[in-house]
Image (cartoon, rainbow, N blue to C red; front, side, top):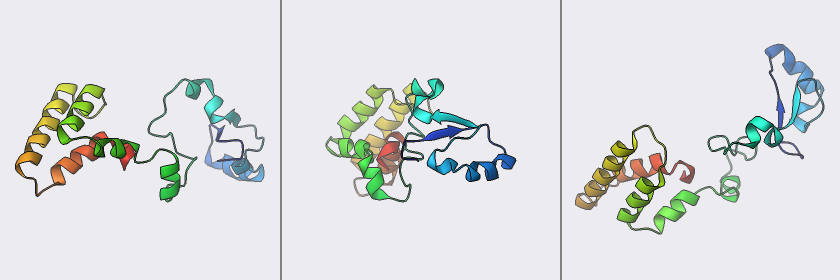
Length: 137
């Protein structure tokens, strides 16, 4: 991350690395492989970045950075709901996952039923919440 934001470089080979450091790329300085600000590149500009939205923006070891960039937002929203409302919210949202939508709906309802019958064990419901609210962790 530079003072101007994230700056894109590439394609980069191992042989390019010394030259990038000599050019102070980590401060966003000019280099033949520089493409400009990452968020201004046409390919990136039109994307909704989820997985890599905070890469290069926050310190991955800093809880303060995570919270300052909406970390735990999903968990905070879920904690305001009753379990059945969480399941309804997730199944209605169309969140993508490893399973088909129908299978996910069944899994969530199964987890909800398991939570109701085994209120002393939260391992299965917590695993399901983590899977469907990834930005909450």
